[in-house]
Image 1: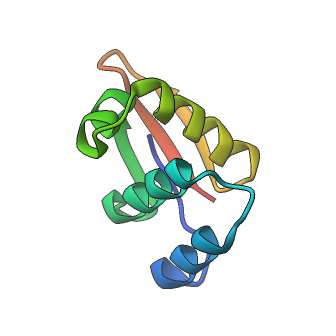
Image 2 (image 1 turned 135 degrees about the horizontal axis):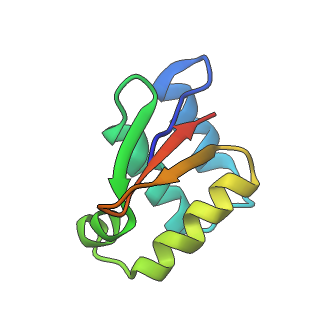
Length: 90
């Protein structure tokens, strides 16, 4: 997954995510995790790896990624052979 940041940096993004009442707690945690893992606003990682690192179900990760896309935080670009997705933080 690859994520790209909006202008304002990590601190502003973290504040926005935490204050967004539309997002479920698991979704906020996953977004914060991706924010920490990003390099130049992008992360390439599998949903399975996120689930393992956060000790949660893969289905929870899938649901949270969809929620983050719905509200315009990220864009999932592709899923490669190794099941890693390229996500852009918008």
